[in-house]
Image (cartoon, rainbow, N blue to C red; front, side, top):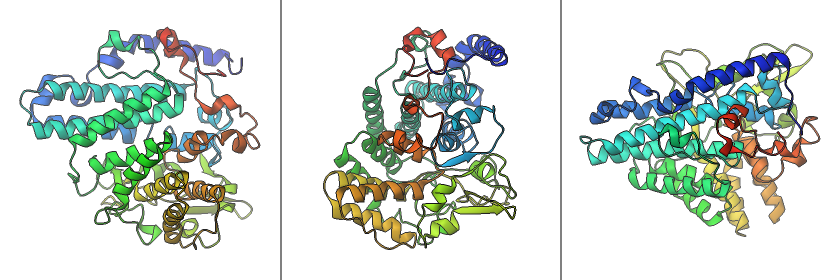
Length: 464
């Protein structure tokens, strides 16, 4: 089978990793979490400490795997995995395996994606248990914090199911139960995500608790629900959820100037993650920005730049360029500050209203409402300084929407990869440009160490 190499050095690293994982397996599922005592009942007897436990979940999203703006997050990893970013690091580096499509089941990056995600899920499960058992928190506080934790867990599962396919779905913290869980089919995972999101929505308020839009409310849950319904081809429901946000014009509005879109005060923001330190800005800026060539890590694929239309303001405002006089490299410039600015100017955007316009456009088109689809598509195009789309057929409008998603959402949490994956376009797009591409690359492998510890996770994903 493809992808079964065992280089000697890597073998020793892997054996060491297995030893560490086996020794720490129980810790992974039972160790104290945020605040040092996430499972301690005392944490959930006080509103301040209970809230701090939930805030730690947002911090983990920001700082570790999945949605982190660091190179190990899906924004960078799946960008180089697709046709979005080019990798300029050294050959043989872990990230190079993603770029070359030579990913193996014992790769440390794959391990980190899996273990980091399930660590976050464990923390949310522990938080949910603590909230349920609390005897002193008010019902209103319990509902708010439970809704936020369920949203965060659903967000983690959404990315896991799209990266790995069938996955285990633990909802508790008992080690003996979790260690032997079987995989759940993709369709069932989505059902469970939707069920959890509906409950979260019922628990949360429509209002933001903070002006900075850094905590989940009903609108944030609706944004994820709209995306989930789109991915599961539930077009009418996707249209409804996206419409809930789009029609709330007193809260969500596209910034007239694309240069304002990624500032922390942007009215297009649905959910964002604040920096760890006051005065700090985004991890995305630290990852993507560079001032001299060649790029130290990644740069935008030149073909992506060439595919943007003349007059597109996003090309001028969201893309930076560096030249050495002979060659020019381009980088994502949505976030412009990679150092301390005294007062934080940019937060990491998890959901923006522009995605909801594009979700509704696609959902409308799939239901035969081509005029409605074009209307939503043109809102995004016009804001970027472009004229209305000239697409006039089902296929033409669909292609225009997918192209617009690429140009609007590039370098944001793997949207491009997940789009070409869900639309069955990955083989068509990547086979001509990725010599290592194989159709089975549509999923990442389940980490080999996990299969060794839990045989119920077999069979391994095809091709590994």
